Length: 150
Image (tube, rainbow, N blue to C red; front, side, top):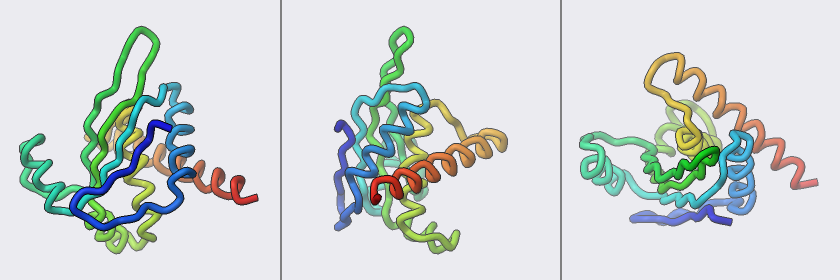
């Protein structure tokens, strides 16, 4: 499956990789898009800060940076991306929002995919729609997980 997981400057092991790959693919297909290649790169804050400075001219920490390499051709939208996620930011946000690390990580992972599918989050209505789609996708993962374990 063309979803890959890598690490940069951090010792991190992602759990349930095959299940997450199937879930991400199903979200993309639900959005009537085609999965190309997605590389998730889990990193530390320092690596993410350098990416933010070098590519986005931002001097701040963030939990995710999604590089959009999607291909659009006639009626086809192929999702391709490098998605960088700061594990330190996700850990910090999980504490801040009082949620489990794994839940926050899954939200961030699907947030990047939803951007690639066309969802935005700059305005209040867009943020609300993005949050609804994140919640819908996370619910799908929970259902997917319970069906797989039977």
